[in-house]
Amino acid sequence: MAETTEPLDTAWLTLPDLVSVLDEPLGRVRRMLDDAQLIGSRRTGVFAVPAAFIVSGRPLASLRGTVFALRDAGLSDDEAIDWLFAVDDTIGQPPLAALRAGRKSEVRRVARTLA
Image 1 (cartoon, helix red, strand yellow):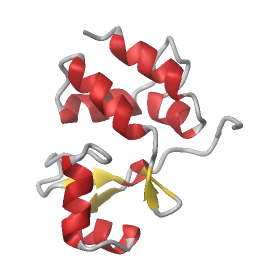
Image 2 (cartoon, rainbow, N blue to C red):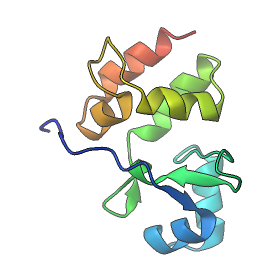
Image 3 (cartoon, rainbow, N blue to C red):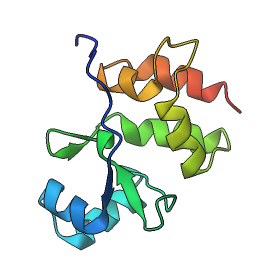
Image 4 (cartoon, one colour):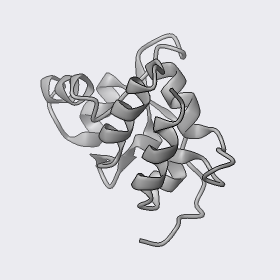
């Protein structure tokens, strides 16, 4: 898969937004959150998920395993979101951009070194 050069969308989606974007009932959206297919934060005042975690109307497939690696390294969901959006010198771009470009092995390798 080719690397993407498009900027990451950093809009935040609330639960009602996710229901609409994913075209799934609220219960299914909550299961996606419980299963770490998506992670979110209350930093905007209300719980929301970065829109960049959604690709073609579905959660980014490589996000779940990466979230587990970040949690194993001791990061909270807020810290994980910050790390995913910040440029990482080892990867050369934000880890989320690398995930969206299909470079999940590299991202997870770096995530495991954060412990």
